[in-house]
Image (cartoon, rainbow, N blue to C red):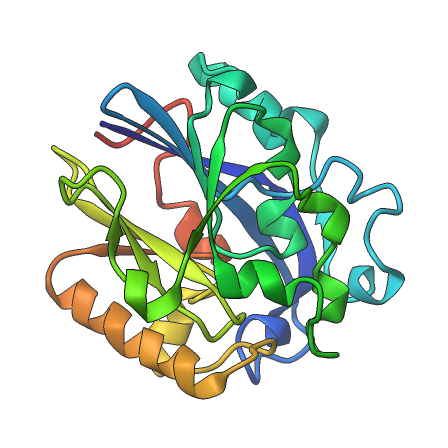
Length: 255
C-alpha cells in the first residue's frame, strides 16, 4: 500500500470559520486530497478544487469569506501524474462530501466509481440556506458512476474487505459526510477526517467550526476521533495549516 498526501493549493480565509471564536485572524488552509494504491487499484479520497474556482465559478458570497488559491499543476487530475498515475487509471473515488473544495474534480476521472453517501448526494439539490453557497451541482454530473452508501447501515464500510480502507459515516459538517480510515502496512493507521474535523484544535478543545450543519453530530465525531487517537491512529484534519506541514507530501508517501 502507498498513501500520498496532496493539496490543491490553499483557501485564503479567517480562523473564525474553522475554529469558532478564532476571530478575523488571516488563515490560509490547505485543500487536501489523497491517493491510495492498494491491491493493484488507485483510489482517491476527495478531489480538491474545481479548475474554474479562481475564475468566477464560485458564488461571490462564498469567495468573500473563502478564496481559493492554486496553480493548474495542483489540480488533482494533473497532480497525480507526478507519481505516475493518469486520471483514467483512477478506479475509485471516496468523496467525503460534495462541497466545492472536496468534489471539484469528480468529472475528471472517467473510469472511477464514486462512493458517496446517498444523503449527501440528495442534499446537493435542496440545501439549507447556510450551505447553499458551498454546493455546485455542475460538479456532480448524474452520468458519473455513483455508488451510494446509506448512513449508519453502511457505517464502517470496508472497501476491500481486509480492514485497510474503512469508510466511517461522520455527518455533522454536512448531511452525509464520511471519512476514511487507512491502515498502512508499515507507517500505521491514518484517519482522513476531511471536514468532520477542520483542525486539531477542534479535537483538543472540543471547539466547533464556524460552519456546521449539525453541532451535536459534529461533537460526537470529536469523541470518536479522541478514541481513535488513544488507539494510536493519526488523525488528519481537513484544513489544519500547521499540522499539514508535518506530514509527508507527494511524491513522498506512507506505506
